[in-house]
Length: 222
Image 1 (cartoon, rainbow, N blue to C red):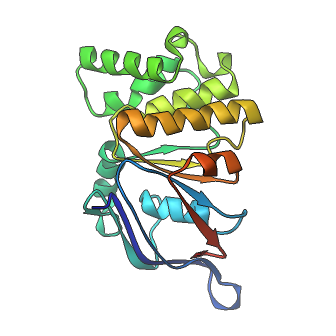
Image 2 (image 1 turned 135 degrees about the vertical axis):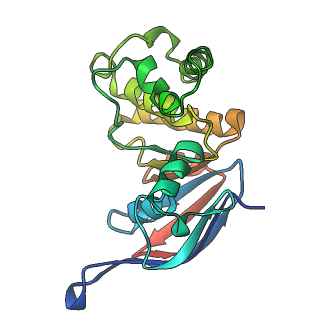
């Protein structure tokens, strides 16, 4: 049983002599409830691969299935539904809405899903507790440290109970100690929430915490 199936995925940018092969015939499977570290130097194709898996980009060849859904066959409405219900993102730059409080940021996906207010508030409170920020619910991003902002971003990503969490260098903007805390949090969330996490990283600590490491070099999985 797999939660993620990537088959023969290739992605090119440009044409002619200037073509860049970002991904070259990439194939792998990921089992549910695991944390997988995607490792490779800058320009190796990690972000392109994550974008293809999450439906933010389309491959030139190949297929991607997430939780039994063929991502590569979906139209824009289908992709929007996928990202609301099955796949969530955590970005290196946090991506929080500056004018909203921590609680409002976490609850934003639930508002989009028209979750009833009482249920939404309960889920937000639970998630802020999970990431250790129960006492910071009313603070805006600008009033939080980088590590706290990334914790809010993780809580927001988990709001709609996704099956797959995609994190693109989630500790890239953080100091070593804070990054370690965020990585340990992600590891704990995989175990407590049963979510599957695919995390791109350069950090050897994250690799050590992962159930599996996938190395990518020049667009190919090694």
